[in-house]
Image (cartoon, rainbow over the protein chains, first blue to last red):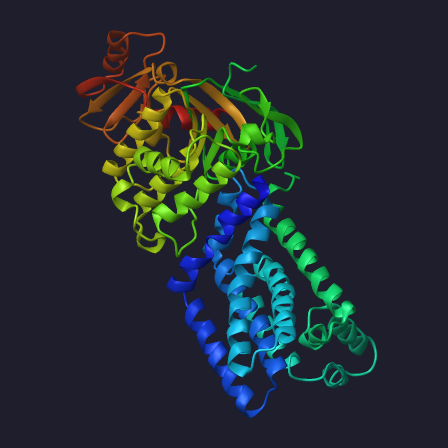
Length: 223
Length: 290
């Protein structure tokens, strides 16, 4: 119960950020662009998945990416909470706006429940991955991930892997594409693919744990 | 052991210790030393934010890692950092929710109101972080550290870099907390800021406490200042040359004896006065002696 209350306290930080930072306007701009693209180039599933994933990355950059916010995590740890509660709460705060954006895009492009479920799960997985990257590396990492996800979300993975020369680089690229959160994986959630669902949920758990470890690093030994 | 609000026993770590200290409830102890002496590190160890290699920290007899102990100890870091988009009230509400999550009888709103009053921030409650000046940031840092009725406060440079009015105000607020039984360990690079606050001073050098004692004892030593018409070629034994003339500690001799020594050396004495040693001098002497 105490853990959930701490998570809730973290989660409540989301609303001031939506209205007082560029997060709100960025999400609106992203949604508008994706809906426009749905009328010209992209199918509804791609648009909804992109809305969830890219919205999660934007949220992560706004919610944990600011340098002061990252330093402030150590102040939070001086109070009765845990790194895991902070990571979980921030993850919720990241996923909620992204999931809302995905639902709005789904409604604009023709509501399909299976597509919305896939987009929300994709937002959860990508949001968790973005949380780890941004807590550890800052906003720059969020920008890199945003660009990668925007591209990898529309291009078939085989074509991306083929860009690398045969050998170790291609093997590494193929492994990263296979293991990392990617929208081509999560498209299959809409068709009920259990492997894709397991992949996404594994990233949710792993991401929160890694972010929690990163947040708790300030309690490392004095060696 | 439980009579002490805070005890650090044989703490060692990288660039730290061995260091031991004990703080009584209501006591204000100042931790002074140059930059890099280990003040921040020692405070973070005391707060449980850093784990020492050896030794242990106890808060009211409980290990600092114990959740109950962590509810009793507040830490204000050297550089106050709070989420930039939030207001003072929202920041404190966030911390108050964490306290109430751990189980407290009072509502978060009550804790926030009390913390705002402790730090004198009631009028600034609706201001956002990016519009706060240094003094208000330090007040907020004190407010978050004291929030939830904490009984031990670890304040890192809380009085540094402030104008005299803000410093006087914060000093009286910290003294007020101590009067209510809160133990305070406050670090400062400049010892002068602690002269009217700390009852006990600990001088830190290279992570070790090289001198400690009640402020009244440390400042008890008197200094004779002698103003001369012309600078001396060589000072008498026990004197040192200053910009205005000479000065010497009055340990083991009277003013008359010291002035007689000046006259014996045919020095043109214009005036003399006796003053007490400043904390800055005590700290510098302690630092140089080790």
